[in-house]
Length: 513
Image (cartoon, rainbow, N blue to C red; front, top):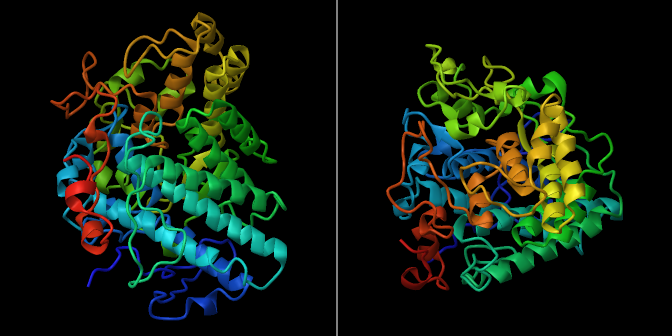
């Protein structure tokens, strides 16, 4: 009998919130009555907290779990698919296969990227759908009901947004291309599968969910009980990113501005930028996960693959910056210290171009919070959106507000040299000439390792180039990486989906092999 890959839900742990330090295991809803948990707002928030715990849990693949640990593993593999972020050696093998584009052919395996990614995001969606199904019956304070439902709508939108960018080309020019299956109701083993529909269908659902979420959150913007919880400002931030991909520049400006209006939120300055990006208490954090000792995933974690001083995976496979990008950073820019220079210091952590931006907060306990979204990201979205509308002076000011915090001695000269144009002339490498070139370049520097570089490569239609002079890349594709819609840039759909979904035909619905 065919069974949907993502039929079992509501089965992860409570423990994200600041008031709880213990796990709460619940059974899959095709084995117990999910309605029991979803009768009250307290139970519904427990279920929502379970989703938040999933965001940095491993186990989404049958094997290779050390490279599949939620949101930050997505950020890592999609960064490695570009040019700015690289591995200087295979090491234990984790993520190196993404970097050298050797995962798409492994779609039949339950241990590789396609299966783990599809399973992760659709499990988030399945859980959100069960919570949303209780929207009319949930008992409790109406404001609390609205807030929980707003969280679930935003989570579902976020998951679909990730899926459609990973498994299909960018929105503009591909609206009628096959999308990903859209489910808005709870799924069980008996549920009928859905077909791929179109890219437009998926974005329509994403926007409907975000609009609903923002409306519900907006009834009381102060109800975020923990930084791990989605709130009004994070929902606006997600909507800003969706608008950017869809080239809805006025919307991208509007929603990024609203996200940045959160009280107390500010961009990092001074020595805070050298703190290791391991604490949700930093003043620029919009959304993140506070990780306590009992929840540390140790080896299956972002920091085990990033912090070369910890004696874990990164020790033999450093995550490094592309030498071309490093060379674009002036010596007066404080961010240059996020990476080593060209000289080999002789230890794992001092190898050429190795990153020191991300570090454990406590190596002994393998601790470090996960930051999913910072205000600097939205500042750069706003600058890009303004420029694309022809609001070049305002875009320049928005970019300057960030750059003067990073390069107070040199930012003005850099901006004064940029032609006041919204045209992107630089491509993947080259000489930045315009204001838009600088906006994208600063995005690549500031958000290195934090945003999914391959998504930007797709939406900007630049392709990528790993062959700059003296390139430190250990793998360079033999195929045309400058093709803006290369099939290599998106993942193949896991065979398990075709095995369990009668509405999907592997011969017709699989992405190009």
